[in-house]
Length: 219
Image 1 (cartoon, rainbow, N blue to C red):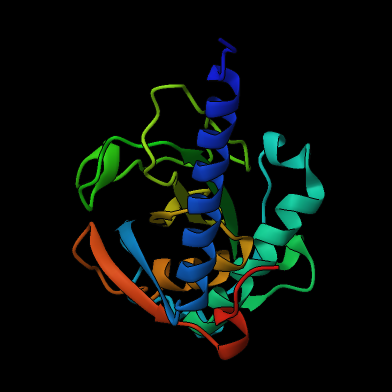
Image 2: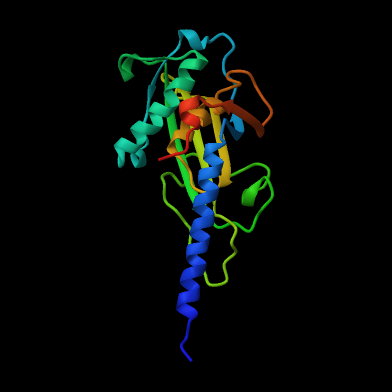
């Protein structure tokens, strides 16, 4: 009697991929806002007005390795910084503050189904500790048909250029079924800076409405 185990295994994998694809597409198509868990720290000087403050981006050595990707992260953060009142300096030397930004992402098959995910109610806060789009995801013969979870985190750090003192640190984390989309970075940075410079409860849930063109399914 022929062994149909490999064929059954391939059918199982195909079924999972179909579920994953359908979930990701349906979720993105209905996405009208981006909800993130935000944690912010620091004491912005009350006498310092963001509208009178210029900034320049600063890159860590690890971020200089993939300059095009880091440029995309900085471009996604720029609108949120402008909304907060900051102006991009003509040159880094002319900036009042230096801004470091990072994006982290991962894709995983998760046994956790609660709203907080595997890291608990305080999320996985850190600056660039798993930066980039690397996936940690695989299928096994005993796998569940649950779609994979994706997690994105954006980080933003503002420090005084002269004293190097950190003035503000903020993180936004988002978890969802299916894959992640780089277009979510901009609304996540907007969520991270939504309450700036006022102190706010951390962590907190922040929702940012999407523009109609951003709500379309990724290609």
